[in-house]
Amino acid sequence: MPDIDAIAAIQPNKTTKDEVERSLGSPSSINMYGKETWLYVGETTETVAFLERDVSERSVLLVTFDKDGVVTDVEAHGLDVARDIEPIERKTPTVGKQMTVIEQLVGNFNRFKNIGSSK
Picture 1 (tube, rainbow, N blue to C red):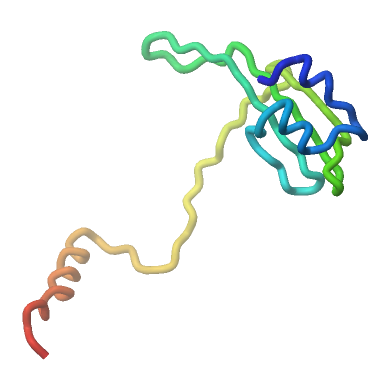
Picture 2 (cartoon, rainbow, N blue to C red):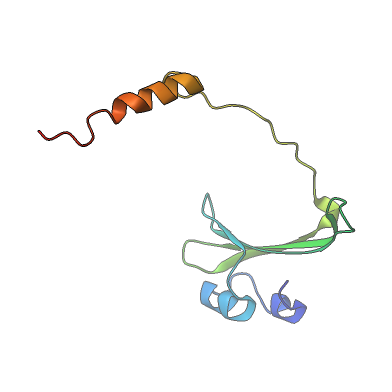
């Protein structure tokens, strides 16, 4: 995460994009939908042997800009507002025919039958 003093120096309606980048560095991610928002994400994790990774600390800094590139808002969030998300497993339907392994092998034989013959 960026230095606390550098974050405190960012003033809404005064600080520009260039000044933010000079003091905090390039963002972890940029949200381009709606108002442009730069995200600075940092976390501390621990992994013990083969167990799942445990996040002990996380901080997210959101810096929002107006259309002229001037800071409009600065928000900081910690691990206390984090939520676990369960991904939904789905399959995307595709167009085409489902082929068995044997159909694929036979199809490949037909594909190479004219190799080496002169036309």
